Amino acid sequence: MIEVRGLTKRYGDVLAVDDLSFDVVPGTVTGFLGPNGAGKSTTMRMVLGLDRPTAGTALVGGRRFAELTEPLREVGALLDPGAVHPGRTGRDHLRVAARTNGIPARRVDEVLGQVGLERAARRRIRAYSLGMRQRLGIAAALLGDPRVLLFDEPVNGLDLDGVRWIRGLLRGLADEGRTVLVSSHLLGEVQAIADRLVVIGRGRLVADVTTDELLRGPGRPRVRVRSPQPEALTALLRRHGLSAEPAGGAELQVEGGTAAQVGDLAAAAAIPLHHLSETAASLEEAYLALTGEAVEHPGRPVAATPEGAR
Ligand SMILES: Nc1ncnc2c1ncn2[C@@H]1O[C@H](COP(=O)(O)OP(=O)(O)OP(=O)(O)O)[C@@H](O)[C@H]1O
Image (cartoon, rainbow, N blue to C red; front, side):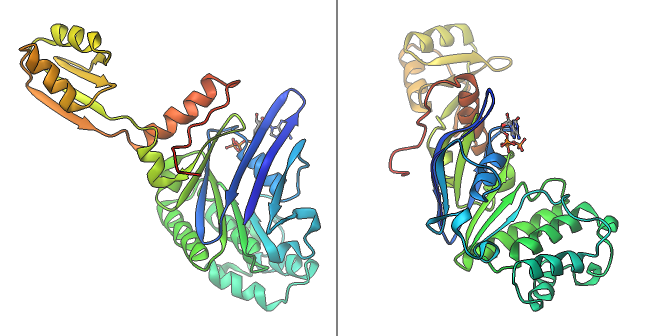
């Protein structure tokens, strides 16, 4: 379990993390989403005791990182897969980490197997591909068999096979009852794997929801309608408080009402319709709407969490 409460980090004039509170619960994969610069890495670094909060707390298993007696056995992290000694072999890199953290050497071969690096284990890291470095970073995170795992942008730069492999790994770790937090600036990357999503923008919490709730919560239905009298229809809909914008040819995009409302209004005004359909906003649109709002109105507290989500 990770508990973040009122977490704040200021770098000079930059408020990188701004009064952030959320929980990451065991047995789930939680996606940590936000545009570049939203404060995801800074938050993770504070959870891992690598950065000191300006205010607030981040607890792992009920304790601050600095209070953990055997940190690597309690929390593992993939932050910067480039931060390794290139002249070492993958195996030596893990052996050093195991030794300095009092972890039995047999774990090295176990985690190498777990990430599929057995055959490359005796090669120097400088010869590793990005995907192999990523796997090595994950092996290091798993070394102490921790209950809590943080992965910062783990699929960055990976090919489709690598992305699939990481998704399967994260799911497996959560199914074992571990707490898994995985950051990304791309919703599509975590949507398929995350049970929950913590969304931040400009350091502030924007949404803390299940993946399904994000789709249902802020997404309003959007209506597409085509009529041989688009001007008359536009004027009619706007008079009734709906937004209607040209969407090419005689088609309009309508927001603020349902397809049934649009059809009824048109029928009552004897305006013929040649097409009428309703689509829910995609998860991507819902995400952009949320984080866009956080960017446009940085000073305003954003409470976009749908009812019942928390
Ligand atoms: N050491 C630092 N000194 C000064 N500013 C920093 C420092 N670290 C981060 N920042 C600033 O804090 C803000 C949040 O950065 P952070 O790296 O946490 O965002 P992020 O969500 O992880 O973004 P990305 O996806 O680009 O990694 C940014 O404006 C960044 O420039």
